Length: 167
Image (cartoon, rainbow, N blue to C red):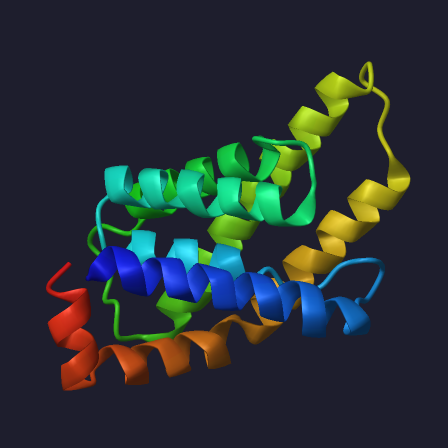
């Protein structure tokens, strides 16, 4: 049941990213909702589950968006693993917890994408890509607290707990 919920959330996030948020892009970037789901799942789970879900969600995003196959899968998988590792020992009901995790996940995601692009373009830095990644990072951080607040409210509902289970 948890797999179905994560799959539905990933599909809905991809549709919102590509159909709605893409029209409001700032510096050719918009918030990455799939990354939010990966980060929140990894931060309330363990690193291995964050890695597996990040790989699956990123691969779906690669297939849906026609990007380099594997780039988003690797970036989101590593981000899920790092956030899952970094989260231990923190108080998860604090809204800053979501902000810090989104910031960490966004930085790792951007670093992997930048590294893959550098390696595939003979180490030539694309200024437009840097601006886009920086813009996406800032947008992710700005909306992290309200999105995490919604996540925490929804997560406490009994029907969600029965599907999601104890992480």
